[in-house]
Amino acid sequence: MSERPTNFDRELLAAAAAGDLTDAERAVVDAMCAGDPEARAELEALELAAGAVVAAESQMEEMPAALRAQILQTRRLQIQPEQRREGSASRPMAYLGWLAAAACLALAAVAWFAGGPGATPEQAPTLAEQRQQLLAEAPDAIQLDWQDWAAEGAPPEIAGVQGDVVWSESRQEGYLRFVGLPRNDANEQYQLWIIDRRGLFDETGQSARISGAIFDAREGELIVPIDPAIPVKEAGAFAVTIEEPGGVWASDMTRRVVIAARG
Amino acid sequence: VPPTLLQRVADNEPGAAEACLESYGGLVWSLARRFLQNRADAEDAAQEIFVDIWKSAGRYDPAVASEAAFVAMIARRRLIDRLRKSGRTPKTAELLEETTLSQPTAGKANGPEGAEDLAQAIAAMDALGTEQSRVLRLSLGQGLSHQQIADATGMPVGTVKTHIRRGLIQVRQRVAQARVEAST
Image (cartoon, rainbow over all chains, first blue to last red; front, side, top):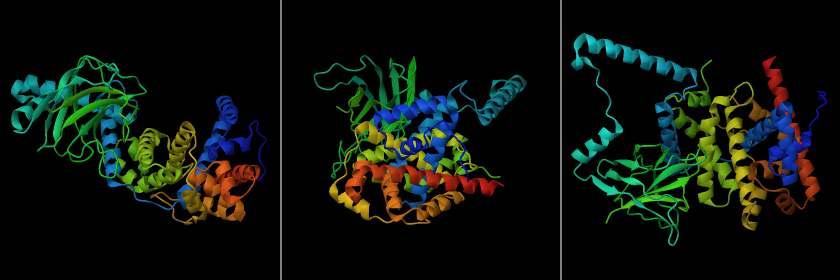
């Protein structure tokens, strides 16, 4: 097969796909790909070939169950805001979803006018209502207020956030409520950590903090459901940090926001 | 044609993320463990990789590559980026020894996708010389630097570089050629 002449350095692209470039070489590759769609396509083809090699030849090691649970939790938390956010739907299926929602609203209006308020379809409770319900119904529900949280000797990264945590151990259900939590930048998200009787580290020195939510903030009151990666046993404190989008598996807890702890 | 697993993930289909993790969790985790010495770093990286996979699932084109190759590409990108940002940490002598001696398990294609490109990749690797395929495996599958491979194999760094670059180009050409032939 004869190769068509190209304006890019294929060997350099292969080095990029293999992942071992000097800074100077990387700058050349970046410039090459920025100005040449064919170079970009060639780089991706080389990366896919590298992917095919490692996928074909890798000896598999099973992923730890706790990590799988954490990844799936991240996925659930990632999907929920997308499904709730108005105006962000760009996929055809999402567009159809909004059409369906509009049709449901129209039907609800017709039902209301036809049969009065009693004919209105039952609405799912809001997060605020679910939080109130948990407080009212769960005998072991606790409510802990947020406090500013900073490293010793350092000012808090964010001060004056109000709100609380409601948590029921028996139901493994809880809600975070924030007032005044600043809207996060696009390149970061807030993450909740639950410290239970296992403490900060387990007996092997691994992080034992439980990720409980990864979320974005907006103006006004914000309520976030807690969705722990693994069952919580005797929750002692709830702490919020700033992490990269999608959250992290084990936080270094350097960017502290608020904490709520049992007395 | 039924949607692929990644297309189902892109459509937020219930259960698709779980199925994707079931199919490719081992691949991603194994790569993360081999590229990164520290287990906590590997866990962090695996999580980041799957966030990338969820985000990129809509771009997957089954006409171009198998899902396993696509997933491995995303995983390697993230792991290479991590190594670069952290300053590539030399592996311990013990791990390097283990790496050097590890043998590929040809034909262990991962995931439910038809894996013609994986079979072609194996064939292309087999067609390379023993030294060249060994160097390429250490680079692609273990994330070792040119210098680390040179230290492990006793080859000059320049030879290592050439083996990796030209070897990968040959694999890419064979995989692409097979795709073209399959589509005509």
